[in-house]
Image 1 (cartoon, helix red, strand yellow):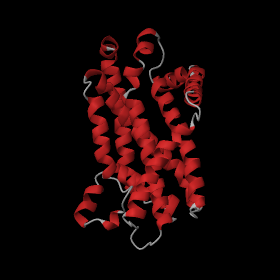
Image 2: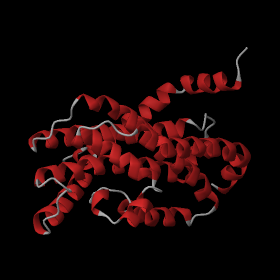
Image 3: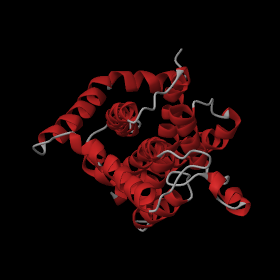
Length: 268
């Protein structure tokens, strides 16, 4: 006898072709949309890193504490941007999930969980492109990650699960309260500066360092930097807040979808 969980997985398995074709079509559209195609996927975050590196390390002479090397600072920026880009893209995918797919949701009967899976796989594919570009640039800068890079896939999945879980939950709220879609980008801008991406926590006063500790993404960013730049094993216990928030977010998604799905369809 099949349990509700196995039934859910069985339903998703039956729609694996729909999931696969949706992801492939999205990637193809990105490549066909302009003359340089999918390069746009990685240009924006790389350009952002380049601007920060030039302004902060070249013009303002910013350095990491104890490291008088511009290249290391640029690598530090790139690894932080890599993590942050995956988080924000997956969160934004979840945020617009239901409004952007309103027509499909109202007209076609299918497991709703396929939509966040598609969004997550698209975000993951985009980030893999960016990861390869980042590793290439790190090599050109003379920064070569060690065997500790074996932990990076775990960090990627944790970041993706957190961003998508929070995003889908906010996406449900966004159906009922449209201001959510306006507020979230503003909050993300503040969160960016409360992550150690363009600065090192060691360069901050103790009070500000304590504030950073309350942002789960600051620990995720640090883990990427530890693995890719500093050749350190990340502190696994520091990742628990991100894991817990991600799990709770998905639990809330399941709860609210079961309670409000009919209302959502009416509003959409």
